[in-house]
Amino acid sequence: NLGESFKTIAKSYGDIFSIRVGTEMAVVLNSYEAIKAAFSKAELCARPNTFMFRFFSQGENGIASTSGEKWEVQRK
Image (cartoon, rainbow, N blue to C red; front, top):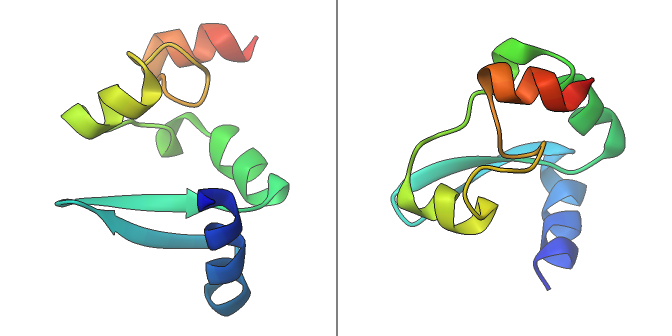
């Protein structure tokens, strides 16, 4: 279970940590507070345009996977 694995890692490294997924670096936000802080600032919400990101975000349609103007509209 990926969520449980992230909880275990967070116990050692804190609620914000990075992992490597294939050749890409990913940042994991593992608490409500960390997610709220990051997603409330447009400059922290840029998303990579990689195959893996598009695959896991199902086409960059949700609030967790959009950026720019699309992100701002969804935040309202």
